[in-house]
Length: 212
Image 1: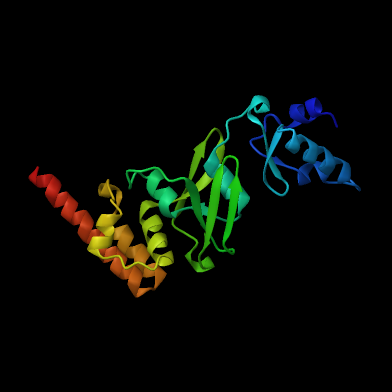
Image 2: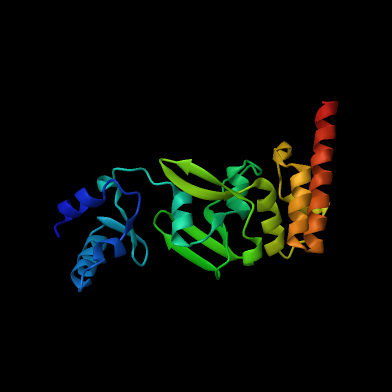
């Protein structure tokens, strides 16, 4: 297949998954050789084995990185620090696309970003919503679940001093009832303490805003 023909077939796709092209073919080697050549010449970008993007000069569709995060490791949803950034709970940008998955830990360093996946139990795989951009859908932790996921996976104790170090902001987004309910679903004393500390911090911020 010539590259022009390949571009014509895939330019409307956000991501190229090569198994779709090799389905029904007895020999996938010729396609693999072509992909290797196009990768070396910079015409396509490899995200992981069998998953590619067209390089920007040939790409017709904008790519939503959160969609890529969900595609590279399934099932997964964006959580932890990247979810903090998405919900504007922290003032700084986060370089890695951090997700959680019931599968084992994984990390993909790609030309479009670093995608990091942390393992959680399958029974804790909940508390997320769908977000869509450019017609591509991803899954994002609710703010309360992102905070609880963070402390579930962190050795740090969620006391007032550590929460201050996190420089959390816009705490009006946190729903105390939801935070408490989610923490009980974890079934971990540490996460109950996390909820209590967060609710206390939210209440303190609300009181301070009233006095301004």
